[in-house]
Length: 261
Ligand SMILES: NC(=O)c1ccc[n+]([C@@H]2O[C@H](COP(=O)([O-])OP(=O)(O)OC[C@H]3O[C@@H](n4cnc5c(N)ncnc54)[C@H](OP(=O)(O)O)[C@@H]3O)[C@@H](O)[C@H]2O)c1
Image 1 (cartoon, rainbow, N blue to C red):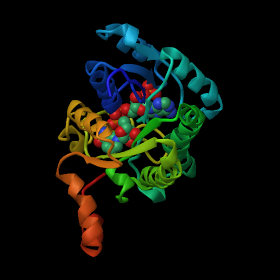
Image 2: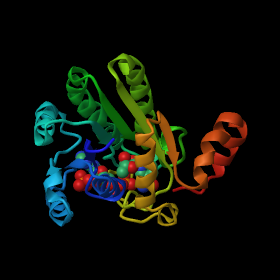
Image 3: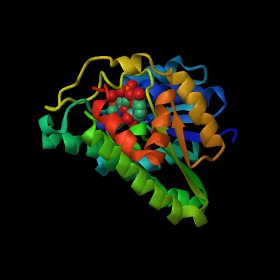
């Protein structure tokens, strides 16, 4: 898997930033995207091999530009081997107090943004006879929890879409890896939307005590390299997926009392 060109969204912070470091360390070239052009340029200029970093800023909610973006991405290093759809926003609000516009925004960025970008790149992957989509979903893409109704919906929707896509594209040698992190120490809660659409601006305890983004990136790198279809990343919270699968009644009762904001 050496000398691949890897396009990483949400590269300005947290898991995406750590993934850029990891892929560069392993000798790959990276195309880095998010809305914050200045941060991305700084990241490129501070990297050990700036010539292997291409800055491609964009907003996941502005999907009209995506075909042109994909052309630019392919031209940057002559190919794209892997698209890591990592950019996204979280939520911290009860459904009852969340404006519908906020529900829509979470779907627009996390689901439609990711789907539109992947669909824009898909004709290139098909023509090229190979390609790999990785999607940073969440454990909340496997089960809903309080205070995350629209976020959970957006991540569940990604599983539905990309599981269908994986089956459709098997003959085209295009793979799909769905990644479900638990608690990772990033700014995700600080940047999370509250019911009225403003930022929470607080670090959650669970994230503060969570896995480092660097450790998370290492695990993701290995999983993608191994061609995994789905992976759970995090501490003991990831066992909740098995609890739900094998003891759904008990899981449901625990969830009612869960101390997650
Ligand atoms: N940390 C966790 O515990 C955790 C757990 C499960 C899943 N995840 C998922 O992991 C992914 C990365 O999150 P993180 O934890 O690293 O949080 P983060 O530090 O807040 O990073 C989020 C990234 O997404 C980008 N982004 C947000 N809105 C965007 C938009 N409209 N257009 C383009 N880019 C946008 C941000 O860049 P700009 O602001 O520069 O645009 C930033 O680079 C997300 O999909 C999140 O749902 C995180």
